[in-house]
Amino acid sequence: MSRIGRQPIAIPEGVTLTVEESGIVVKGPKGKLVPPTFPELEIKIEGREVRVTKKGKDDKAGALHGLARSLIANAIKGVVEGYEKRLELVGTGYRVKKEGDKLVLSLGFSHPVIVEPIEGVSLDIEGNKEIIVGGLDKQRVGQVAANIRKLRKPEPYKGKGIRYKGEVVRRKPGKAAKVGAAQGGA
Image 1 (cartoon, rainbow, N blue to C red):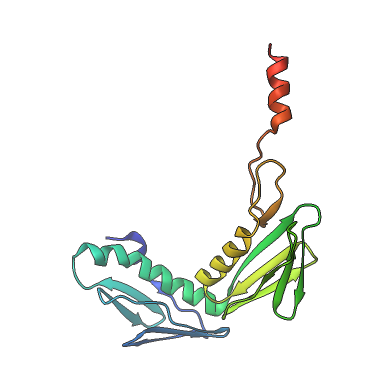
Image 2: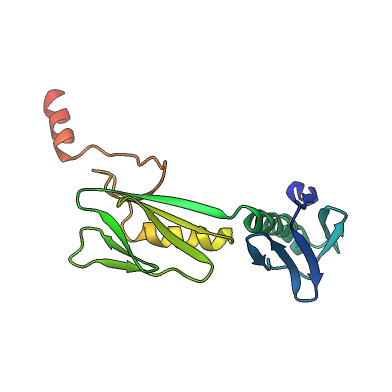
Protein backbone atom coordinates (compact mmCIF):
# COMPACT_ATOMS: atom_id res chain seq x y z
CA MET A 1 0.00 0.00 0.00
CA SER A 2 1.20 3.49 -0.78
CA ARG A 3 2.69 5.30 2.19
CA ILE A 4 1.88 8.68 0.65
CA GLY A 5 -1.66 7.67 -0.27
CA ARG A 6 -2.51 6.62 3.29
CA GLN A 7 -1.76 10.03 4.79
CA PRO A 8 -4.80 12.26 5.35
CA ILE A 9 -4.85 15.76 3.86
CA ALA A 10 -5.78 18.60 6.23
CA ILE A 11 -8.23 21.14 4.82
CA PRO A 12 -7.26 24.67 5.94
CA GLU A 13 -9.79 27.38 6.84
CA GLY A 14 -11.32 29.12 3.84
CA VAL A 15 -11.00 26.06 1.56
CA THR A 16 -14.01 24.03 0.46
CA LEU A 17 -13.90 20.64 -1.22
CA THR A 18 -16.83 19.06 -3.00
CA VAL A 19 -16.87 15.62 -4.57
CA GLU A 20 -18.86 15.58 -7.80
CA GLU A 21 -19.26 12.91 -10.50
CA SER A 22 -16.81 14.85 -12.69
CA GLY A 23 -14.20 14.87 -9.93
CA ILE A 24 -13.24 16.84 -6.84
CA VAL A 25 -13.53 20.65 -6.84
CA VAL A 26 -11.17 22.64 -4.61
CA LYS A 27 -12.14 26.27 -3.95
CA GLY A 28 -10.04 28.68 -1.92
CA PRO A 29 -9.16 32.34 -1.46
CA LYS A 30 -7.01 32.46 -4.65
CA GLY A 31 -9.35 30.53 -6.96
CA LYS A 32 -10.69 27.13 -7.98
CA LEU A 33 -8.94 23.96 -9.19
CA VAL A 34 -10.26 20.58 -10.33
CA PRO A 35 -7.54 17.93 -9.90
CA PRO A 36 -8.08 14.71 -11.88
CA THR A 37 -9.64 11.75 -10.09
CA PHE A 38 -9.61 8.07 -10.95
CA PRO A 39 -12.46 5.50 -10.85
CA GLU A 40 -10.22 2.98 -9.02
CA LEU A 41 -10.06 5.30 -5.97
CA GLU A 42 -12.56 6.67 -3.49
CA ILE A 43 -12.27 10.15 -1.99
CA LYS A 44 -13.86 10.74 1.43
CA ILE A 45 -14.18 14.08 3.21
CA GLU A 46 -14.33 13.58 6.98
CA GLY A 47 -14.60 16.86 8.89
CA ARG A 48 -11.50 18.95 8.04
CA GLU A 49 -9.63 16.01 6.43
CA VAL A 50 -9.62 14.27 3.06
CA ARG A 51 -8.72 10.61 2.68
CA VAL A 52 -8.01 8.71 -0.52
CA THR A 53 -8.70 4.97 -0.43
CA LYS A 54 -8.44 2.20 -3.01
CA LYS A 55 -11.65 0.47 -4.11
CA GLY A 56 -9.92 -2.76 -5.14
CA LYS A 57 -6.68 -4.67 -4.77
CA ASP A 58 -5.49 -4.33 -8.38
CA ASP A 59 -2.09 -2.91 -9.30
CA LYS A 60 -3.50 0.13 -11.11
CA ALA A 61 -5.29 1.32 -7.95
CA GLY A 62 -2.05 0.97 -6.00
CA ALA A 63 -0.14 2.92 -8.63
CA LEU A 64 -2.66 5.78 -8.62
CA HIS A 65 -3.19 5.95 -4.85
CA GLY A 66 -0.24 8.18 -3.94
CA LEU A 67 -0.59 10.19 -7.15
CA ALA A 68 -4.22 11.13 -6.46
CA ARG A 69 -3.41 12.13 -2.87
CA SER A 70 -0.52 14.34 -4.06
CA LEU A 71 -2.64 16.00 -6.75
CA ILE A 72 -5.35 16.88 -4.22
CA ALA A 73 -2.78 18.16 -1.69
CA ASN A 74 -1.11 20.30 -4.40
CA ALA A 75 -4.50 21.73 -5.43
CA ILE A 76 -5.28 22.69 -1.82
CA LYS A 77 -1.88 24.37 -1.42
CA GLY A 78 -2.35 26.12 -4.78
CA VAL A 79 -5.69 27.73 -3.89
CA VAL A 80 -4.32 28.87 -0.50
CA GLU A 81 -0.74 29.99 -1.27
CA GLY A 82 -0.14 29.53 -5.00
CA TYR A 83 3.07 28.37 -6.62
CA GLU A 84 6.04 30.33 -7.91
CA LYS A 85 9.20 29.52 -9.87
CA ARG A 86 12.01 32.02 -10.35
CA LEU A 87 14.37 31.98 -13.32
CA GLU A 88 17.50 34.07 -13.77
CA LEU A 89 19.27 35.08 -16.97
CA VAL A 90 23.05 34.74 -16.85
CA GLY A 91 25.17 36.12 -19.68
CA THR A 92 26.34 39.34 -21.27
CA GLY A 93 23.45 41.02 -23.05
CA TYR A 94 20.84 38.57 -21.75
CA ARG A 95 17.85 40.50 -20.44
CA VAL A 96 14.09 40.46 -20.24
CA LYS A 97 11.43 43.15 -20.44
CA LYS A 98 7.67 43.03 -20.14
CA GLU A 99 5.31 44.33 -22.84
CA GLY A 100 1.71 43.99 -21.68
CA ASP A 101 1.42 40.45 -20.38
CA LYS A 102 4.15 39.11 -22.73
CA LEU A 103 7.85 38.76 -22.00
CA VAL A 104 10.45 39.86 -24.55
CA LEU A 105 13.77 38.10 -24.01
CA SER A 106 17.14 39.04 -25.52
CA LEU A 107 19.14 35.79 -25.46
CA GLY A 108 21.95 36.37 -27.93
CA PHE A 109 19.89 35.34 -30.96
CA SER A 110 19.47 37.60 -33.99
CA HIS A 111 15.88 38.25 -32.90
CA PRO A 112 14.06 38.83 -29.61
CA VAL A 113 12.15 35.84 -28.20
CA ILE A 114 8.54 36.54 -27.16
CA VAL A 115 6.91 34.40 -24.45
CA GLU A 116 3.16 34.55 -23.93
CA PRO A 117 1.57 33.32 -20.70
CA ILE A 118 -0.94 30.47 -20.75
CA GLU A 119 -4.26 30.56 -18.90
CA GLY A 120 -3.82 30.42 -15.13
CA VAL A 121 -0.12 31.39 -15.17
CA SER A 122 1.28 34.89 -14.64
CA LEU A 123 4.67 36.11 -15.84
CA ASP A 124 6.45 38.93 -13.99
CA ILE A 125 9.97 40.28 -14.00
CA GLU A 126 12.28 41.63 -11.33
CA GLY A 127 14.95 43.93 -12.72
CA ASN A 128 16.00 42.87 -16.19
CA LYS A 129 17.60 39.53 -15.28
CA GLU A 130 14.90 37.65 -13.30
CA ILE A 131 11.60 36.07 -14.39
CA ILE A 132 8.87 35.08 -11.92
CA VAL A 133 6.36 32.44 -13.06
CA GLY A 134 3.35 32.14 -10.74
CA GLY A 135 -0.06 30.51 -10.57
CA LEU A 136 -2.39 28.12 -8.76
CA ASP A 137 -1.59 24.90 -10.62
CA LYS A 138 1.80 23.44 -9.72
CA GLN A 139 2.05 21.45 -12.96
CA ARG A 140 1.32 24.43 -15.22
CA VAL A 141 3.74 26.74 -13.38
CA GLY A 142 6.50 24.14 -13.61
CA GLN A 143 5.83 23.47 -17.29
CA VAL A 144 5.89 27.16 -18.26
CA ALA A 145 9.13 27.65 -16.29
CA ALA A 146 10.67 24.61 -18.01
CA ASN A 147 9.61 25.90 -21.44
CA ILE A 148 11.24 29.28 -20.75
CA ARG A 149 14.43 27.59 -19.49
CA LYS A 150 14.50 25.43 -22.63
CA LEU A 151 14.85 28.55 -24.81
CA ARG A 152 18.51 28.86 -23.73
CA LYS A 153 19.66 26.14 -21.32
CA PRO A 154 22.74 26.94 -19.21
CA GLU A 155 25.81 25.77 -21.08
CA PRO A 156 28.59 24.01 -19.15
CA TYR A 157 31.62 26.06 -20.28
CA LYS A 158 30.72 29.63 -19.35
CA GLY A 159 27.43 29.00 -17.50
CA LYS A 160 25.47 31.35 -19.77
CA GLY A 161 21.74 30.78 -20.24
CA ILE A 162 18.47 30.69 -18.33
CA ARG A 163 18.55 28.79 -15.04
CA TYR A 164 16.30 28.30 -12.05
CA LYS A 165 17.10 30.60 -9.12
CA GLY A 166 19.64 28.80 -6.98
CA GLU A 167 20.39 26.11 -9.60
CA VAL A 168 24.02 25.02 -9.64
CA VAL A 169 25.44 24.52 -13.13
CA ARG A 170 28.35 22.09 -13.28
CA ARG A 171 31.15 23.73 -15.20
CA LYS A 172 33.57 21.93 -17.52
CA PRO A 173 37.14 22.99 -18.12
CA GLY A 174 37.66 24.47 -21.55
CA LYS A 175 40.05 23.40 -24.28
CA ALA A 176 42.88 25.60 -22.94
CA ALA A 177 42.72 23.95 -19.51
CA LYS A 178 43.01 20.48 -21.06
CA VAL A 179 45.98 21.46 -23.25
CA GLY A 180 47.76 23.14 -20.32
CA ALA A 181 47.24 20.11 -18.12
CA ALA A 182 48.66 17.79 -20.78
CA GLN A 183 51.82 19.90 -21.28
CA GLY A 184 52.44 20.41 -17.58
CA GLY A 185 52.22 16.68 -16.83
CA ALA A 186 54.77 15.59 -19.50
